[in-house]
Length: 306
Image 1 (cartoon, rainbow, N blue to C red):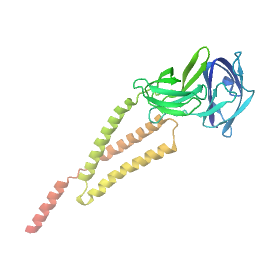
Image 2 (image 1 turned 90 degrees about the vertical axis):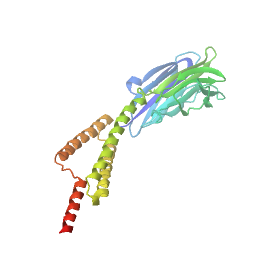
Image 3 (image 1 turned 180 degrees about the horizontal axis):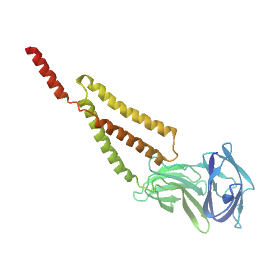
Image 4 (image 1 turned 180 degrees about the vertical axis):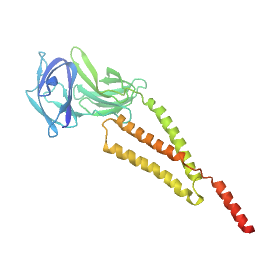
């Protein structure tokens, strides 16, 4: 059985809304107060979809009234978001939950502003404009992880520092009493650990690879007979290829749900491989090519004088 997700964002300043739906009991009825958001978590689907039935009722006099009971089909393995703005038409879009593979930030503007308005994102430090889009655009944009100022109509409405891996939704609205009001929501939490922590691991892995690969190639060359040196070096490199094939098979078959368990399996295989290697090394007889060549030269010399 699959699942889907539902999020609701409200861009109605000073207006409270009660949302009733056929979601699971914990999310069946909820209230949005002013600029607010709601997330359902995972909702079980049947035959690849879930038919959402919902109604939105205003709890504040003089605020926008929405239609009665509405249906919306939610597809499996997607996050569906509803944005409430000053329009009788529901604004649905497919949300993005995956983090940027470049360790940047993903930003979406949700603006309850006139269609002629434009939203400008400007780097605070350099003053460069990095994004300028129409207010009614709900597209997702990839931005660097620095601090920004957000403007509309030349007026500063928001200031925000974006963090690596975060997925953000910036809700912007305006009314006659408060002017421009904005609030940013984290759709996906930013990375909690710096990528710099990968550096010590890569240093250790690289040192291990250099010491093991170089010594292995040297060993296969030095211990091979003169007529088989190239063949044994090829055999050494072939063991590396077999190791990569084992990694691909285990990773693709997905024996474990947790990647940590998969890494422990690789570590266990390496430990067993180390024991086998130690056993062979214990009984191995060293081959000294120089000694063999010297002995053959002496034998030829003796045969010559005989």
